[in-house]
Amino acid sequence: MQIITTPVALDQALAAEREAQKTIGLVPTMGALHAGHASLVSRSVSENDVTVVSVFVNPTQFNDKRDLDSYPRNLEADCALLESLGADIVFAPTVEAAYPEPDTRQFSYPPIDTVMEGGKRPGHFNGVCQIVSKLFLWTRPDRAYFGEKDFQQIAVIRAMVADQGFQLELRPCPIVREESGLAMSSRNALLTADERKTATNIYATLQASKDFAKEHTVAETHDFVVSTLNAINGLEVEYYEIVDGITLQPISDWQETADVVGCITVYCGVRPVRLIDNIRYKG
Ligand code: PAF
Image 1: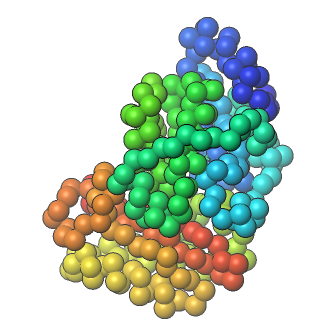
Image 2: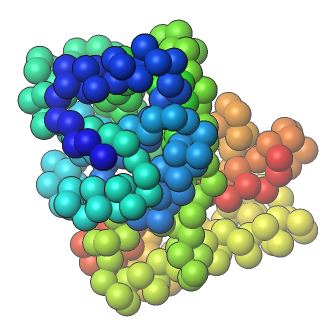
């Protein structure tokens, strides 16, 4: 496994692979890898000749400097895991290598990128599109792998791929959960043992809401999730939206669309740690 830190070196490393018509899979990550990332990497390794995993905490997608500073980083452990999974290249640029000049490009895909995370984290998806488009340009992958925990991110990247004409297949991969049901996330590392237990209520409540939804309206189901979680000490819901899985617009009736997803962001603990999750009601 090679560890590469500049776009030029990445291009050189991939030139021979492209020449030999090898397929390239890209797994973009911000490091602090866990079993969720491992599932993306394993899928890429099984579907491509060459797997590139990028490890880069992208500053342009953080609208809160404290969040950026506290984001967990552990390149050594990440590389050990990636080697064991059969990744071929780890691309871990410095901020200067990734952004030799400030990136002034603006990516805007309303209404997909204006709701939920887009509303709560202004500029977040623009930053995601800036770095992901650079990674696509540098790697020119045949397939790119993203976890469905970041449900809205996949929708925004799909819009960006269509808009920019990238010739690649997006491969959304299912959420990987801890035994407790907590969605795997690099941010879980910031939770204390007690907070981790408290955080398991998020998925438990989302799951319970699927039964609740059978006998209740969208608005009642929304309120059930928010009030159940807010009643638990140490949890505070930032938003819960029940949306059309394609347009990401809130729905008001279960019959409105065939694809319905509930997307949630919850603050957990004293720090607090911002956790996201989602559940499919239909589709
Ligand atoms: O999902 C993430 O970890 C990041 O948003 C991504 C896609 C690697 C871009 O920095």
